[in-house]
Length: 247
Image (cartoon, rainbow, N blue to C red; front, side, top):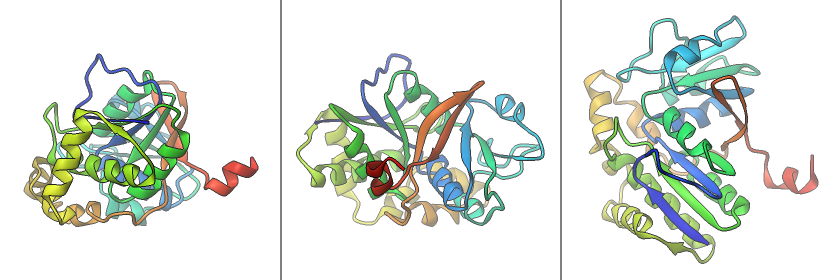
């Protein structure tokens, strides 16, 4: 099985199989936390106005601009906040600067799109391996068009775990991500050095970084199940035993 890592979304990317989208600080971590908190579905939009178009009393808006909650939104993009949010049984519409746009880039061609982070790394990697027939690609969101150490490190963690589950054929991007992972023994060190973490520190939200640095604490894997308007619909993937039984 081919193993591929793309450090940034670009217009010419084509995905024939499974894509793990990574925006560890913070969108894909927050997405898993929202599903853990009981959200029925996540609607990911590429922009704020598309998100606002879904607003009604039954919908929760979550997102960020410059790391902060946009005007009129119910939640920011904090996984700590998401885990405690009253979202049970509700639809959460998400729009962020980097992560939701990366998900849209992957969804243009991929058969399966999963949202991955350190927080759900093992569960996401296992599901990707189960779904893949020829390739697992890891797409890093980066930060405003620049490669992010935090996402590349996370890609390395995912790549390493995928390799432990069976033979893979890593291409150059995957080898680079694996090298980055091996350069840092502590996930928090790698994430804290990133531009994304420094930007959060500047707005007083650095407490989200240790949360995002937790590895394999969640079994919640958001998987793309459809579209509505300009939004991608993600739901929590069913556990393996449920998928095998067809429940």
